[in-house]
Image (cartoon, rainbow, N blue to C red; front, side, top):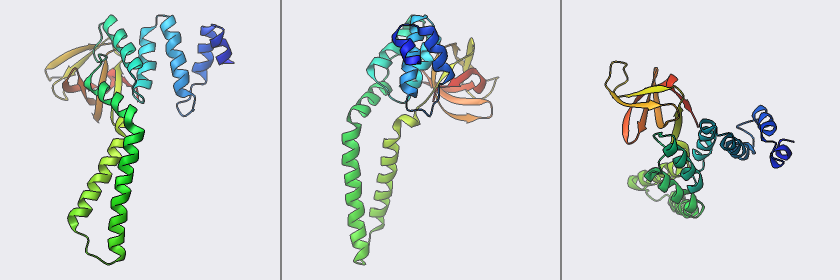
Length: 212
């Protein structure tokens, strides 16, 4: 029903139904997020549009999404949305991922088969080969989960402070306003380690909302 309302341009009615039934575990979650982002754009609700697009961007970075986020960020004078080197690396990652992953899996399987055949023949397996194979499998795991290692959040307070240390007495490196996006990766008590515009610092966990 919501899709029918959306197609007939009854956006507010469709939005209410989408929000009521929004489920992150649903196969339609990303598609609904796109539609909610479009509705937010029509309503000129740029904060909601940022959040919706950023949640998709965190899982599947595409030039269209990244450029739209950069456009909103520039218009609203927000930090963290300019197209970055990380974005460009992710574009390459998603474009070649299926092919490169196939090659890497074949190489790993080839190495495992060789070592297994040595084991069946009771041949000596050099320690360096086991270490190399272990390191290769760890690299393969990191490669396949690269997007999941990048964690994003949006500042939800009108003003947040990026501090040099995890302390309210630490020097302020940047003052962030509502809507700014940060990359974060570690939480310690009430402090979150993050990076904003190339600077690593700390913000309070209550100052942002996680996107992924």
